[in-house]
Length: 95
Image (cartoon, rainbow, N blue to C red; front, side, top):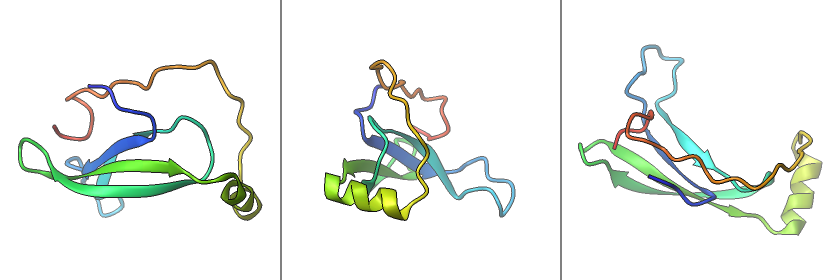
């Protein structure tokens, strides 16, 4: 299964063993660094477990500049274009 850029999934962490482990885990692929607005939709896996389907919207350049002044930003070196890695049913989010 392949995912579009700026999307991801967040599901219940079925490997949680301690209170310090996250309640949810998942993956997201973004096409470039910067400030994004995050949206989520409640969904259910085929086995009935709840998950959140995620989408990210890249903020406009004015908000990007504001974020660079507000947040600690690490330098970024763009790399050659690549395809988002495919998630499989063996990944941490149950499908």
